[in-house]
Length: 113
Image (cartoon, rainbow, N blue to C red; front, side, top):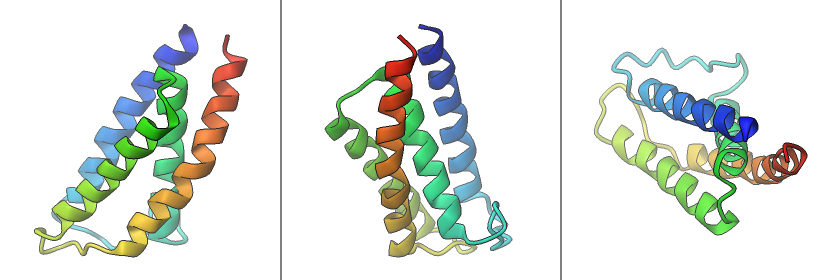
């Protein structure tokens, strides 16, 4: 039970921070992790998938659907922001991060019983 509670709070916090950074008016165009903004996307969606799987143990199809919707939402909102650009490669990086996150989340969830 404790694992799921911590994962839920981590998910809420991560989504709030990632969305705020995605729409912040002054985009410095610097990757947070120092390498590439694609790596930032992959890490954020990896962690989101882990926290969703551990926190709620939802079906994989719902997890993928929710995170795809969130990734599309971010890119869609950025179309209307003059300081940001929407990029299909960001969406692809989201998917690349999400896939291993699902498996790691399942592995952690099983260990938290």
